Amino acid sequence: MHDNESDAAESFPPLVELDDLAVFAKPPGMETISQTGGREFAALVRASRGEPGLTPVHRLDRDTSGAVLFARNGATEKELIDLFRRRLTHKLYLALCLGAPRNRTGRINRNLSEWGGGRRPVRVLKKGGLEASTGYQVLAASDEWAPGMRLGVVAFTPHQGRTHQIRVHAAALGYPVLGDDQYGDRAANRFARERLGLRRSALHAWRLTFPWRGETVAAIAPIPDDLTSAARAAMGEKNVDTARFFASCEDIF
Image 1 (cartoon, rainbow, N blue to C red):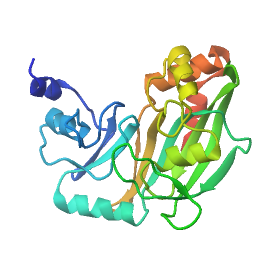
Image 2: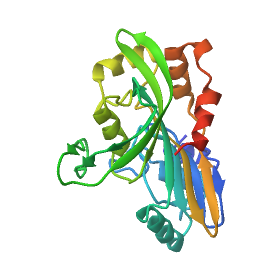
Image 3: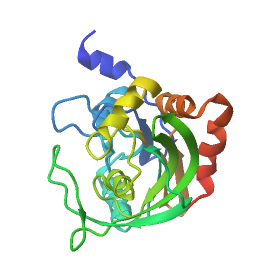
Image 4: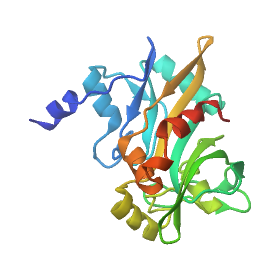
């Protein structure tokens, strides 16, 4: 089968579908829009739906799974981008972190540097830079799953849309996202691959809400199996109820 035939054969049912927009769940391991010629989520969605005009209005990192909003025409694209610019969209992410804060809820206020592209890191700045604030809530925490290592299931909501914001803020708080080799703990990530089967940055764009035509649109992207499996492996079957601590996100922030 040729690549374009296999791409078209992939199915991406919408999480939400309206006349002028749709929301789809991006799997981990592909760029929203590829800059390197690799597998591109936007192109796969267009091929699977037979809609060449579908355009994503925001992006997720390559390893991040979850909800991505697409416009069906240029006018809608401009309106949706304006909603993001005016911070009228609400994004809720779930992460598996190396440990969890003692305070069950809080806010991380750390200014960030501009992203320089590629593998260049975003840095926390004491002065200047871009304003960035991220709310969090700890949903569950494990005992040690490896010597000195605990797992935290943490919900994050970024109040801006800075590149790598959650990943950088989680690391600055001292509880980096597991699997994140750029900002996290590489030794812990190796253990996570070996013992938890976690082979990517454990961050998922779970819920996206925004106002549209007088209504509130809400899209929820199901939690991928690799994250629930890793949580169960770290916490033990008797200690983890994914339905309980993942479903509880709906009422926070």
